[in-house]
Image 1 (tube, one colour):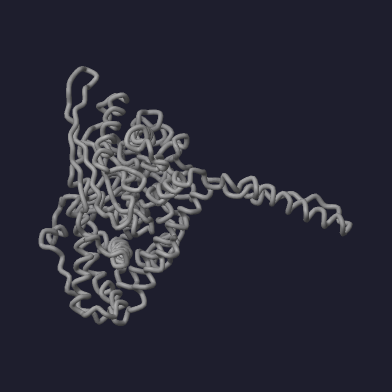
Image 2 (tube, helix red, strand yellow):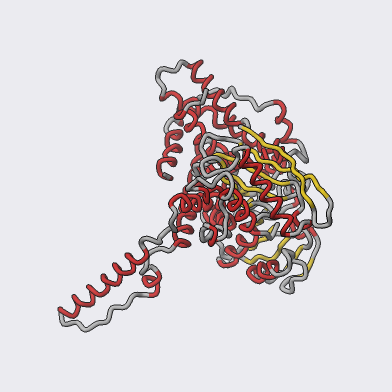
Length: 533
């Protein structure tokens, strides 16, 4: 599957000479042109701007691609490109609803829920559900659009969606959260906004495997009771509920893998004046949630000194390096707070501006702005969060020769492993389960055969597997398959983005390169499948 999709990049690469002489006609819509100057744009307008800017870059390759249709006139070709781009940039449908909640204290409250399906060029749609009092329809639409481009950029055959409930979960009991989650699921199901072939949610901000289990249980016992694949209605579930090994740390692992790939690339390291490899590198983590913590752990395992962590309730610093695993464990046992951690001292927000090699932006959207981008003293920014950098800040960072690894590429590890979980649920069997005993018996027989052959040659030797071979004696278990599949997918996605950056002469602008990669893939899908009339 990945190889067939990967061919798209080569299709667009063949006609570089013709593209270089192309006159660009596409204009960024007036309502988003000023986003590049806006110090505090809306998240939705940010995604719109990044998309339209990338379309302006990709337009020549799109029209050149349509020359494969020999019967198209130039006018017809331009109309088809413009039409597909209009469909691609619009939001397919959005759902907004309200329902009552009886609180533990007897009060009644109206809860606001949202779900947006940005693109149905591939089904099912895919995207997380977040619980935050900042959630509104515009934010959900922005995140859904980002999911469309993220899935396409990483070769994941999903459309983009996102959902949310406008609550602060810290103010609700577990029983109240369960009632909210189950009612939210019922509202989605009644409107045909959930199902293995329709729309598959996942965890996001302030949600986890617990909420996904509630969603799955509610769907299976109501509208999905006759659906054999009902368990695939949601991903990010605990293992016992049909989840997959490696999903919890997948997004952080994806950020780490993307950072590794570009950190080992001499071309990009020369552009920013940094030595390739992890030796002697330092890092600051902005946001030590699921994504930030696992990214930090993987970086520390490679010898990176993580000396600073910025959280919503405190900022921690240790010049000798913070023990990332200990901090993660401390947070888990301290109601999600890093405050009071003994392995570092608290400091002010100026920690963000200290000199480091890698800044992991894993907090929330719009954390790096026009106001603070110029103060940053890092060489690489890995975007673990969605939309942490505004367009104005993006320009400043490129001028400072900072390599920004964009969100739709860097944090795609979560949706990649969600896809693996989705496939596992459709197959109704764990990866590797059917082959583990076969490979163990086969490899044991192989070693025995070698030993018997040596004895026949009068060589008395006991054949024992090396520790490395011993670990593979039984073949790959589920976690090994998932991690290797994730690594392959991230390498493939990074390779495609690099190709687009070189083809369109984008330099350090990997964000536009990633959007162009996604746009070209979605464009081919619409061109081949056509539009429903």
